[in-house]
Length: 207
Length: 102
Image: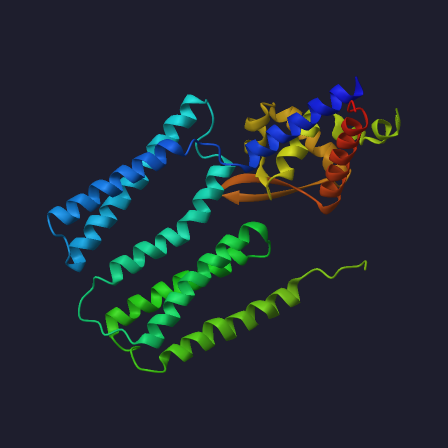
C-alpha cells in the first residue's frame, strides 16, 4: 500500500515537474516545415541566381520569417488541441532563450548588407564578441539569479547601439577603437556589476 | 519492511494540493499565482490556503509586484522548501526501493 502510494506520488511529481519545466510541443512538424522552407529557398536562390548581398539576405531573412511564423502557428494549434495554454511558463522560457541569438542573427544580417561601410577588424570583432557574450549570459541566466540575463541584454543592446552609431556617424572606425570598446564593456562594466553584487548581496550568516 | 521512511514523510508536502505546488515550483525558478492555479486546476481560495501553509513553514516565498498596472503575485521555493522537497522525494524513492521484489 505504501509502495503504491509512493510510486503514485513520484509519478505525480514527475508529471507536474515536466509540465512546469519542459516545452512539450511536438517538434517534428516544426522541423519538417523549416526544412521544407529551407530547401525551397535554396532551390529558388540557385535557380534565380540570388547572389548579391541584398537579394541573398532578403531571400533568407524572408524564409526565416516564414519559418518562425509557421512554427508559431503549428505550436499554437497543438496547444489548442491539447487544451493547454500556448504561452505557458516553458514556452515563455524557450522564447526568452531563443530571442537574443535570433535577434543578433537578424541584426548582423541586416547590418552586413548596408553598403559603403569599411568595418575595421578589431572594432567589428569586439562588437561580434559582445553579441555572442550577451547571448551566452542570457542563456546562463536561466540557471542563475541576480540579473545575469539583464547583464547579457546590456551587452547585446550596447553592441547593436554601437553598430547603429557607427553607421550613422562613421566615427568609430579607427584602428584601436576595439580596445576601447573591450576595455569598457568587458572591463569596466564587469567591475561595476561585481561591485554592485558585492554591495547588495545578502551576507551569509552561517558557514 | 522498515516503516521508518513512510513515517518520516513531511506531512505538509504529502497533501495532494501542496505536493502539486511544490512539484511545479521545484521545476522552475518561479511561477505566478495564475499559472499555478491554471496548471493545478485549483480555485483561488484553495491555492491561497495551500500557499499560505507552505509560506508559514518557510517552504515558499511569495512576491507581490505590478505588471501593466495589474497586481502580480509570484511564488518560488525557498532554500528550505527545496531541501524539504528533495528529502520528500528521496524518502518516496527509498520506500519504492525497499519494497521492490528481488
